[in-house]
Length: 225
Image (cartoon, rainbow, N blue to C red; front, top):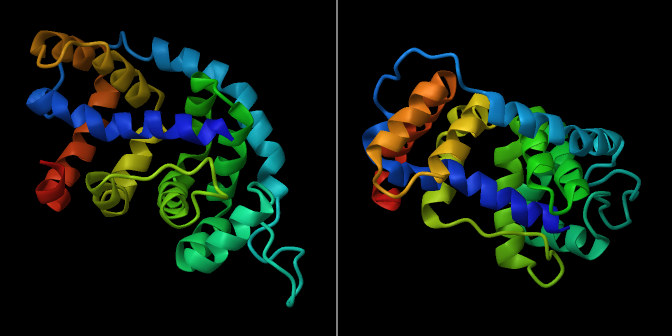
């Protein structure tokens, strides 16, 4: 299940790139050069999304378990499923009653350590990304011994994901937003010229990412610095 650990390396990039400062809140110069990097990611992610698609019929928290039986999750080990159903009941139920969250778990798990495949999962099933993140965070805190895939969020992420769910998921489902993030992570810290070049190359992604930062500042500034 190493794939879910890789997910959070990518997910946190959306929020960590806020350290790029105001460069991503300015209006981008018009350009249509962007998207090539993310298009490659989406192509490589195709295998992962196909694998995730096979998981679309996996049972939810109560599927197949019977009224008196333990919950069954399908995409996580039974011990993890039982633990999160008990210790993270609301977040567990939310994820496993949301098809896109189950599909994200299945898809990213099938990706293993293929980062580009994971990006493909976000592009296809990103509408379940926040629910998966909140579930994974609780699993990491309450059930780490039996949920080795789970990754905890930091305080900024715990605030931003639910507070800015529409903005974050819109970015996750955009090839150009992933391409912008990928470009920005290659810049040296504080290199505003590099950041502006990324903006110009990925204007659609810049608009989406700026909305994430604007929401984060409005809702979570005390926790995100």
